[in-house]
Image 1 (cartoon, one colour):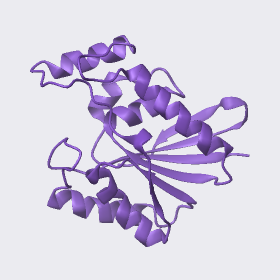
Image 2 (cartoon, helix red, strand yellow; image 1 turned 90 degrees about the vertical axis):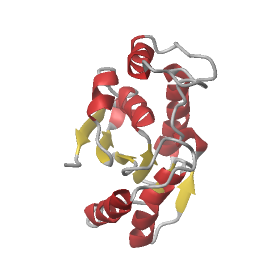
Image 3 (cartoon, one colour; image 1 turned 180 degrees about the vertical axis):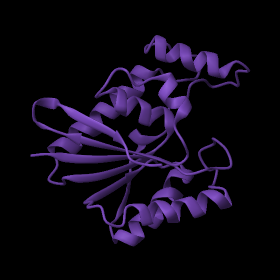
Image 4 (cartoon, helix red, strand yellow; image 1 turned 180 degrees about the horizontal axis):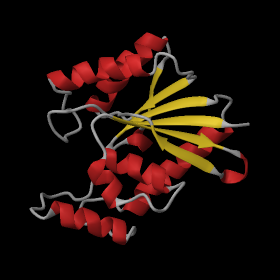
Length: 181
């Protein structure tokens, strides 16, 4: 049976910390995102526990009258425990070497293992239409789990919000479409 996963990057936020809220524009975007999904079928909504992801998902959950589930595996990957002035270069390095982890941070490989665990549950579940609300780096890793051409360049052009439709077919095949514009 075909399953559909919608991977949603959170709306515009005030920052990158766990408890950073959406901006006023981001709150409007979250309402627009809920409207965008109005005609699309969904059975389950799962969000990162980061506040900006939750605030992105709540209007959709309310509009669809679906319980919002939080899952740590959708948390953004922390690249390093300390600030890096050249963070974009170092971030690119983590896509060139998926096992690269900086002090206090998580490798992309570790982030992908979280994604694989969640995907295994989704594919085994009875739900056929699932929305995942997460963060740019983790969504890029999710997409990469189906197509290894997804990487740093895709992350850098991703918008807030952004939406990808992943159609899972038999034999592990997936069709990925960016459906947000």
